Amino acid sequence: MTKKSANHTQSLKIPKIILLTSKLISFISPKLITLFAAKLFTTPIKHKIPKRELEMDRNSLQKLVSIPAIGKEVVVYEYGKSEKKVLLVHGWSGRGTQLFKIADELLKVGYSTLSFDAPAHGKSPGKDTIMVDFIATILEIEKQFGPFEAAIGHSLGGMSVLNAIKKGLKVNYAVVIGSGDIVEDIIDDFVAKLELKPTVSTLLRLHFEKKYGEKMNSYSAFLAAKETAIPVLVIHDNNDPEVPVKAGIHIHKYLKNGELLLTDGLGHRKILGNSKVIEKTVQFIQNK
Image (tube, rainbow, N blue to C red; front, side, top):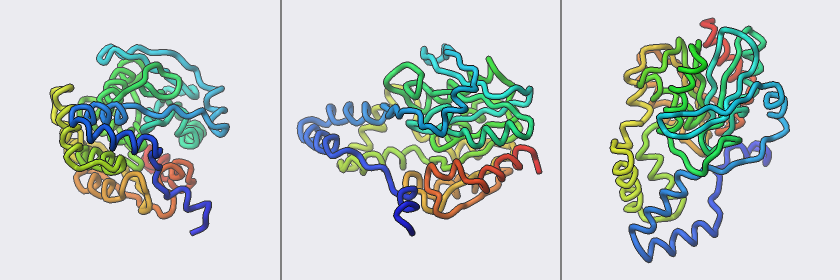
Protein backbone atom coordinates (compact mmCIF):
# COMPACT_ATOMS: atom_id res chain seq x y z
CA MET A 1 0.00 0.00 0.00
CA THR A 2 1.34 3.43 -0.91
CA LYS A 3 1.76 6.16 1.68
CA LYS A 4 -1.07 8.14 0.09
CA SER A 5 -3.55 5.26 0.14
CA ALA A 6 -2.50 4.30 3.67
CA ASN A 7 -3.85 7.63 4.91
CA HIS A 8 -7.37 6.60 3.92
CA THR A 9 -7.22 3.51 6.10
CA GLN A 10 -5.56 5.08 9.13
CA SER A 11 -7.62 5.68 12.26
CA LEU A 12 -8.00 9.23 13.58
CA LYS A 13 -5.79 9.82 16.61
CA ILE A 14 -6.89 11.56 19.83
CA PRO A 15 -4.56 14.44 20.82
CA LYS A 16 -2.10 13.59 23.62
CA ILE A 17 -3.30 16.47 25.79
CA ILE A 18 -6.80 14.92 25.88
CA LEU A 19 -5.37 11.48 26.69
CA LEU A 20 -3.31 12.93 29.55
CA THR A 21 -6.23 14.97 30.88
CA SER A 22 -8.50 11.91 30.74
CA LYS A 23 -6.04 9.78 32.71
CA LEU A 24 -5.55 12.49 35.32
CA ILE A 25 -9.30 12.96 35.85
CA SER A 26 -9.83 9.17 36.01
CA PHE A 27 -7.50 9.03 39.03
CA ILE A 28 -9.44 11.79 40.77
CA SER A 29 -13.06 10.65 40.48
CA PRO A 30 -15.21 8.09 38.57
CA LYS A 31 -18.02 10.68 38.38
CA LEU A 32 -15.75 13.37 36.93
CA ILE A 33 -14.25 11.08 34.29
CA THR A 34 -17.75 9.96 33.31
CA LEU A 35 -18.83 13.57 32.79
CA PHE A 36 -15.60 14.44 30.97
CA ALA A 37 -15.88 11.39 28.67
CA ALA A 38 -19.56 12.20 28.02
CA LYS A 39 -18.59 15.75 27.02
CA LEU A 40 -15.95 14.45 24.60
CA PHE A 41 -18.32 11.79 23.22
CA THR A 42 -21.00 14.37 22.40
CA THR A 43 -18.76 17.16 21.06
CA PRO A 44 -18.07 16.93 17.31
CA ILE A 45 -15.13 18.63 15.61
CA LYS A 46 -16.23 21.40 13.25
CA HIS A 47 -14.04 21.19 10.17
CA LYS A 48 -13.71 23.99 7.64
CA ILE A 49 -15.58 23.15 4.44
CA PRO A 50 -13.07 21.75 1.90
CA LYS A 51 -12.75 23.29 -1.57
CA ARG A 52 -14.19 20.18 -3.23
CA GLU A 53 -17.53 20.80 -1.47
CA LEU A 54 -17.79 24.51 -2.26
CA GLU A 55 -19.78 24.07 -5.48
CA MET A 56 -22.58 22.20 -3.69
CA ASP A 57 -22.42 24.77 -0.91
CA ARG A 58 -22.75 27.68 -3.41
CA ASN A 59 -25.51 26.07 -5.46
CA SER A 60 -27.70 24.94 -2.56
CA LEU A 61 -30.68 26.78 -1.17
CA GLN A 62 -29.87 26.97 2.54
CA LYS A 63 -32.11 27.73 5.48
CA LEU A 64 -32.10 27.41 9.24
CA VAL A 65 -34.78 24.95 10.36
CA SER A 66 -36.12 24.36 13.87
CA ILE A 67 -36.29 20.81 15.25
CA PRO A 68 -38.91 21.15 18.05
CA ALA A 69 -38.48 17.60 19.44
CA ILE A 70 -34.95 18.43 20.61
CA GLY A 71 -35.12 22.22 20.88
CA LYS A 72 -32.34 22.73 18.35
CA GLU A 73 -31.84 24.23 14.89
CA VAL A 74 -30.07 22.90 11.81
CA VAL A 75 -28.97 24.30 8.47
CA VAL A 76 -30.68 22.50 5.58
CA TYR A 77 -29.31 22.27 2.01
CA GLU A 78 -31.75 21.92 -0.91
CA TYR A 79 -29.71 20.89 -3.96
CA GLY A 80 -31.24 20.64 -7.44
CA LYS A 81 -34.86 20.97 -8.51
CA SER A 82 -36.91 17.80 -8.75
CA GLU A 83 -39.91 16.32 -7.01
CA LYS A 84 -37.91 13.09 -6.72
CA LYS A 85 -35.94 13.83 -3.56
CA VAL A 86 -33.19 11.89 -1.81
CA LEU A 87 -32.20 12.60 1.80
CA LEU A 88 -28.44 12.60 2.55
CA VAL A 89 -27.20 12.20 6.13
CA HIS A 90 -23.55 12.79 7.05
CA GLY A 91 -21.66 11.15 9.90
CA TRP A 92 -19.96 12.38 13.09
CA SER A 93 -18.01 15.62 12.57
CA GLY A 94 -19.26 15.71 8.96
CA ARG A 95 -21.26 18.28 6.98
CA GLY A 96 -24.33 18.48 4.79
CA THR A 97 -22.12 18.86 1.71
CA GLN A 98 -19.91 15.86 2.49
CA LEU A 99 -21.81 13.51 0.17
CA PHE A 100 -21.49 16.00 -2.71
CA LYS A 101 -20.24 13.49 -5.29
CA ILE A 102 -23.22 11.24 -4.69
CA ALA A 103 -25.50 14.30 -4.82
CA ASP A 104 -24.03 15.41 -8.16
CA GLU A 105 -24.67 12.01 -9.74
CA LEU A 106 -28.22 11.93 -8.39
CA LEU A 107 -28.90 15.34 -9.96
CA LYS A 108 -27.67 14.04 -13.33
CA VAL A 109 -30.34 11.29 -13.34
CA GLY A 110 -33.24 13.52 -12.32
CA TYR A 111 -33.24 13.64 -8.53
CA SER A 112 -32.76 16.52 -6.11
CA THR A 113 -31.13 16.07 -2.74
CA LEU A 114 -31.78 17.43 0.70
CA SER A 115 -29.11 17.32 3.37
CA PHE A 116 -28.37 19.10 6.64
CA ASP A 117 -25.63 20.01 9.07
CA ALA A 118 -26.63 18.02 12.15
CA PRO A 119 -26.86 19.91 15.45
CA ALA A 120 -23.40 21.26 16.47
CA HIS A 121 -22.04 20.36 13.00
CA GLY A 122 -21.05 22.59 10.09
CA LYS A 123 -23.07 25.81 10.06
CA SER A 124 -25.66 24.57 12.57
CA PRO A 125 -25.58 26.14 16.04
CA GLY A 126 -24.70 24.27 19.21
CA LYS A 127 -21.69 22.58 20.77
CA ASP A 128 -22.89 19.06 21.56
CA THR A 129 -25.15 16.42 20.07
CA ILE A 130 -25.82 12.67 19.94
CA MET A 131 -27.47 10.17 17.59
CA VAL A 132 -30.89 10.83 19.16
CA ASP A 133 -30.63 14.37 17.69
CA PHE A 134 -29.73 13.04 14.23
CA ILE A 135 -32.82 10.80 14.24
CA ALA A 136 -35.14 13.58 15.45
CA THR A 137 -33.73 15.88 12.73
CA ILE A 138 -34.38 13.31 9.99
CA LEU A 139 -37.99 12.82 11.12
CA GLU A 140 -38.66 16.57 11.32
CA ILE A 141 -37.08 17.21 7.93
CA GLU A 142 -39.32 14.54 6.41
CA LYS A 143 -42.33 16.42 7.82
CA GLN A 144 -41.18 19.74 6.38
CA PHE A 145 -39.49 18.71 3.10
CA GLY A 146 -40.59 15.15 2.30
CA PRO A 147 -41.59 12.77 1.00
CA PHE A 148 -38.23 11.25 -0.01
CA GLU A 149 -37.65 8.50 -2.54
CA ALA A 150 -34.59 7.28 -0.64
CA ALA A 151 -32.20 8.04 2.20
CA ILE A 152 -28.42 7.68 2.16
CA GLY A 153 -26.42 7.78 5.38
CA HIS A 154 -22.68 7.65 6.09
CA SER A 155 -21.23 6.33 9.36
CA LEU A 156 -23.39 7.64 12.25
CA GLY A 157 -25.70 8.93 9.51
CA GLY A 158 -26.25 5.33 8.38
CA MET A 159 -27.19 4.24 11.90
CA SER A 160 -29.49 7.26 12.14
CA VAL A 161 -31.23 6.47 8.83
CA LEU A 162 -31.98 2.89 9.92
CA ASN A 163 -33.26 4.07 13.31
CA ALA A 164 -35.37 6.79 11.65
CA ILE A 165 -36.96 4.15 9.39
CA LYS A 166 -37.71 2.11 12.53
CA LYS A 167 -39.38 5.21 14.00
CA GLY A 168 -41.49 5.97 10.92
CA LEU A 169 -39.38 7.52 8.13
CA LYS A 170 -41.01 6.50 4.84
CA VAL A 171 -38.60 5.87 1.96
CA ASN A 172 -38.54 3.32 -0.85
CA TYR A 173 -34.81 2.60 -0.62
CA ALA A 174 -31.96 3.19 1.83
CA VAL A 175 -28.19 3.06 1.47
CA VAL A 176 -25.87 2.96 4.50
CA ILE A 177 -22.13 3.48 3.98
CA GLY A 178 -19.55 2.70 6.67
CA SER A 179 -22.31 2.49 9.26
CA GLY A 180 -21.70 1.74 12.92
CA ASP A 181 -23.73 -1.04 14.48
CA ILE A 182 -23.77 -1.95 18.18
CA VAL A 183 -23.82 1.13 20.42
CA GLU A 184 -22.02 -0.60 23.28
CA ASP A 185 -19.17 -1.51 20.90
CA ILE A 186 -18.92 2.14 19.82
CA ILE A 187 -18.72 3.34 23.44
CA ASP A 188 -16.16 0.62 24.27
CA ASP A 189 -14.03 1.66 21.30
CA PHE A 190 -14.23 5.34 22.28
CA VAL A 191 -13.11 4.59 25.84
CA ALA A 192 -10.29 2.37 24.55
CA LYS A 193 -9.07 5.21 22.30
CA LEU A 194 -8.99 7.44 25.38
CA GLU A 195 -6.79 4.74 26.97
CA LEU A 196 -9.15 4.47 29.94
CA LYS A 197 -10.24 1.38 31.87
CA PRO A 198 -13.22 -0.59 30.47
CA THR A 199 -15.21 0.26 33.61
CA VAL A 200 -15.49 3.83 32.30
CA SER A 201 -17.41 2.45 29.33
CA THR A 202 -20.08 1.03 31.63
CA LEU A 203 -20.28 4.30 33.59
CA LEU A 204 -20.64 6.27 30.35
CA ARG A 205 -23.40 4.00 29.03
CA LEU A 206 -25.32 4.23 32.32
CA HIS A 207 -24.90 8.03 32.28
CA PHE A 208 -26.57 8.29 28.86
CA GLU A 209 -29.28 5.79 29.76
CA LYS A 210 -30.18 7.83 32.83
CA LYS A 211 -30.14 11.07 30.82
CA TYR A 212 -32.29 9.82 27.92
CA GLY A 213 -34.38 7.20 29.73
CA GLU A 214 -33.60 4.53 27.15
CA LYS A 215 -31.18 1.64 26.75
CA MET A 216 -28.36 2.84 24.50
CA ASN A 217 -28.14 -0.54 22.80
CA SER A 218 -31.74 -0.14 21.61
CA TYR A 219 -30.26 2.22 18.99
CA SER A 220 -27.96 -0.46 17.57
CA ALA A 221 -28.25 -0.57 13.78
CA PHE A 222 -28.82 -4.32 13.50
CA LEU A 223 -31.94 -4.04 15.69
CA ALA A 224 -33.35 -1.36 13.39
CA ALA A 225 -32.34 -3.52 10.39
CA LYS A 226 -34.43 -6.38 11.81
CA GLU A 227 -37.55 -4.22 11.50
CA THR A 228 -36.74 -2.75 8.08
CA ALA A 229 -38.68 -4.22 5.17
CA ILE A 230 -37.57 -1.90 2.34
CA PRO A 231 -34.51 -2.69 0.16
CA VAL A 232 -31.31 -1.55 1.88
CA LEU A 233 -27.84 -1.45 0.34
CA VAL A 234 -25.03 -1.81 2.89
CA ILE A 235 -21.61 -0.58 1.71
CA HIS A 236 -18.49 -1.02 3.83
CA ASP A 237 -14.76 -1.11 3.27
CA ASN A 238 -12.78 -4.14 4.42
CA ASN A 239 -10.04 -1.77 5.62
CA ASP A 240 -12.24 0.80 7.42
CA PRO A 241 -10.20 1.88 10.50
CA GLU A 242 -13.01 3.89 12.09
CA VAL A 243 -15.84 1.36 11.89
CA PRO A 244 -14.82 -2.31 11.48
CA VAL A 245 -16.26 -4.14 8.47
CA LYS A 246 -17.95 -6.61 10.83
CA ALA A 247 -20.50 -3.83 11.55
CA GLY A 248 -21.67 -3.71 7.93
CA ILE A 249 -21.72 -7.51 7.61
CA HIS A 250 -23.75 -7.81 10.84
CA ILE A 251 -26.30 -5.18 9.77
CA HIS A 252 -26.76 -6.90 6.42
CA LYS A 253 -27.35 -10.26 8.14
CA TYR A 254 -30.47 -8.89 9.86
CA LEU A 255 -32.04 -7.13 6.87
CA LYS A 256 -35.08 -8.72 5.25
CA ASN A 257 -34.26 -7.21 1.86
CA GLY A 258 -30.59 -6.30 1.99
CA GLU A 259 -27.66 -6.17 -0.38
CA LEU A 260 -24.01 -5.99 0.67
CA LEU A 261 -21.12 -4.34 -1.19
CA LEU A 262 -17.64 -4.69 0.32
CA THR A 263 -14.76 -2.60 -1.02
CA ASP A 264 -11.00 -2.67 -0.49
CA GLY A 265 -8.59 0.12 0.38
CA LEU A 266 -11.14 2.97 0.52
CA GLY A 267 -11.23 3.39 4.29
CA HIS A 268 -13.99 5.34 6.01
CA ARG A 269 -14.24 8.59 3.99
CA LYS A 270 -12.62 8.09 0.59
CA ILE A 271 -15.38 5.52 -0.04
CA LEU A 272 -17.85 8.42 -0.46
CA GLY A 273 -16.06 9.61 -3.61
CA ASN A 274 -15.39 6.25 -5.24
CA SER A 275 -16.96 6.03 -8.71
CA LYS A 276 -18.02 2.37 -8.35
CA VAL A 277 -19.61 3.02 -4.97
CA ILE A 278 -21.48 6.05 -6.34
CA GLU A 279 -22.61 4.16 -9.45
CA LYS A 280 -23.92 1.26 -7.38
CA THR A 281 -25.68 3.65 -4.98
CA VAL A 282 -27.47 5.54 -7.75
CA GLN A 283 -28.44 2.35 -9.60
CA PHE A 284 -29.80 0.83 -6.39
CA ILE A 285 -32.03 3.85 -5.77
CA GLN A 286 -33.20 3.69 -9.40
CA ASN A 287 -33.95 -0.03 -8.92
CA LYS A 288 -31.66 -0.97 -11.82
